[in-house]
Each structure stands twice: as C-alpha cells, then as structure tokens.
Length: 205
Ligand SMILES: [Ca+2]
Image (tube, rainbow, N blue to C red):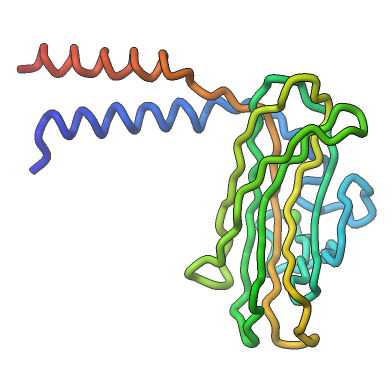
C-alpha cells in the first residue's frame, strides 16, 4: 500500500511532468510536418522520399520513407528561431522488422544552431532501435538556442558503413514531426513546488 508520503511525492512528480509537457504552445514551426504535400520543398530529404504509405502514416496518407539501408540518410528543415529560447523537436518513427541486420547503424536527432549561415553549435540525441518493430514510437530532443542564433536546421540522420544491398534490410518511417518553443521550469520553480508539497504533507500528519 502506498504511504501518504510516496503518494504525495508521486503526485508532485506527476504535476511537474504535466507542467513540462503542456508548456509548449500549439504552434508547429515546421512546414509540411505530416508529409502530406509530396512536392513541398521545406524538407531537405536525402534518400528519404515522401510516399503515400497508407499503412505507415499516422495522420493523412503520406509518410517519409527513410531508407536506412542506404549509407547516409537524412531529413532536415531550417526554421527561424529566437536566441536564448528553448525548443523541442519531436519525431515519430517506425522501425520495420529487420530481415538483414545493418551493422553499425547510427541514428540521431539533431538541432544545428546558426547565426545566418554560420554554424554556432549542435545538439543531438541518439536514436536507439526500439524493442518492438512496426509500431510508431515518439522521440524528442529539447535544447536551447545559443546567444546570437537566428536559425536552426532541425532533423534526423542515419549512417552506417554501407555494405548492405537492396532488399530485406531495415527501413524507418517517419510522420508527424514537430518543432516548437518549450518552457523549461526553472530549478527555483521546481523547488517551490516541492516545498509546497512538503507543507501539505506536514499538514496532513
Ligand atoms: Ca502524414
């Protein structure tokens, strides 16, 4: 049976997570985020064509077919950003069941921060092959735009040494990407929430 303290701690943690997850605004800065427009040029696609894969789309009929059996695939889009502002990149990815193993496959989400055309820094998050194939999983990367940045190249890539031949290898599908500002609670706010919880706990004793 849960003690009051552990129950309250759980509640506080849950409240914190809800605060974080709902603080993003509803604006998606990415164009053609669900890949429904096949000729939209917002995305730069390298061996990752947009196709009407009806059974692979989360919404609509199109998804990006990321041909990970090729040696170097990527999907990127460049958007305007504000310096010293935090952003969250979300990508929904479906890994097909592997027939042939791709050794040394390296996947990552990344955000490259630019001041005009000058690269300032890059944030990355490694993509690991999920336990279950043929179902979508959500992957996220949260990072803060450095000072003077005014643009971000947002996307993902898969690379490997390139020894596979076509047919039977792993592909990854992507749909419903998002990139938007996100408010990260400051440590002081979280501490206040914890103090409020402890005060409530003491009152209940
Ligand atoms: Ca779609």
